[in-house]
Length: 306
Image 1: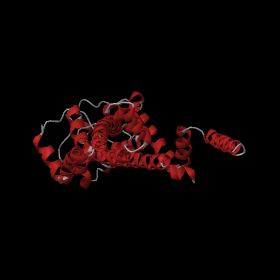
Image 2: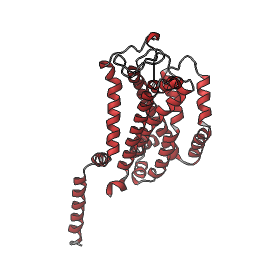
Image 3: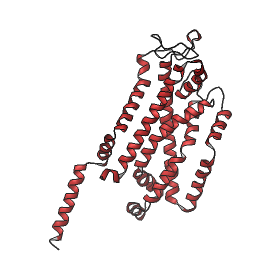
Image 4: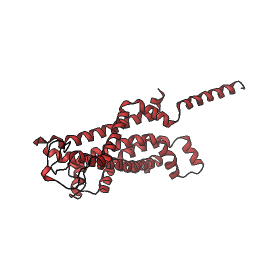
């Protein structure tokens, strides 16, 4: 027996040394993330686009408030690097202003949809039984609604003169929270059986504390990964809605709005009114998808141990 104890101590010390070498969970996630070259490129693209949209207007000054019909549909030149649109707005400056709106809306939608979906899914998964059945049937019903029909309904029933920013965020978040709810509900079904949850129950911990302080924090990996995809999805959905006429009031611009307006002039050869916004949307969406894929791998313990 005495010989077994030193062996156990040595094993524990060896395990502790190994954990110390590997570092904390955050270091493991960062190490795995940086090994993914596409993810690093995605981060670089996102940082570049943020600087381009929010710092660029401080360097490249353009008028994005008043139209100038005399300079409408001008091709790229020294005066206008990417040309002008049908209203005379400088395309490069419009791309910066539209990027601000698109990125802000994408982040806001991801935050609102993720927060609501996480709480909804955690409550459904934790309480289970009839509560889970009712809450998830609501999710199934909403998922069964044809998304294109819903887009058309939203675009035709709301104000045709432009939609306020807060309403646009609410509508997009209302279409986006279902995915996080189902993912977190699945995680909760597994987490609620863990020993630490049982220990909190034995000590008299309330359900609200268990959900908010123990279950949701332990599902943070799934939540963060899904949130990155939510940003990309929100930017794409925003572009689709604006093809249906659901947009911010003028002169506010978004990439989707630029793409929608420019597509009317593509047959006339005015390619500069379409491709810059299209490339910007593709770059940002692909970049966030690269980041999401890398984060998913980074939080996957089995991949970290290989």
